[in-house]
Amino acid sequence: MGTVPAAGRSVKSRGRDHARMLRRLHAEEGGQSAVLILGLLLVVLLLVTVMAGATAVNLEARKLLSAADGAASAAAQAAEQGVSSPTPKVSGAQVRAQAEDYLAASGAHGQFGSLAVSQAWVSDAGETAHVELAAVVDLPMVSTILPAQVSISVESHARVSLNR
Image (spheres, rainbow, N blue to C red):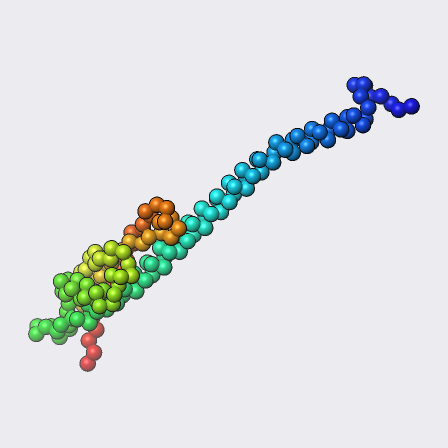
C-alpha cells in the first residue's frame, strides 16, 4: 500500500501540480526577458552612437587643425621686411587676409560646415602669426534623426623665419 501525504493527495498529484506551476511561472517570465534584452540592446546602440560621434568630432578637429596650420604658415610666409627692422614682420590684418586666402585656395570651406577665421593676431612684435578657426561638425547617426551639431575651434601659430 502507498503512503498518503498529510494533505490527502498522492505524490503523483503533487508532482503534476508542481510542473503546472513551473510552466505558469515560466510563461509569465517569458515577456520580462524580452524587455530586458531590448533594454540592453538600446544601451549598446546608444554607446555605439556616442562613440561614433566622438570619433567623428575628433577626426574633424584634426582636419581643422591641419587647415589652421596651413593658414598660419601662409600668414607667416607673407611677412614683409621693413626698412627700420631687419626681421620681417606681419600684422594682424595680414594674418587674417592670408588665412582667409589660404582657406579659399585650399577648398577648406567645402570640407567644413560654417568654417570661419574666428581670430587672427600677432605676437612677439609681429614675428608670430596666430590663427583660430571655428567650424561645425554634424554628428553621424544622430543628425539623421535630430539636427545634432557640435562647434569646434582650433588654434595654430607660425613664426616668421628669415632665410639668408
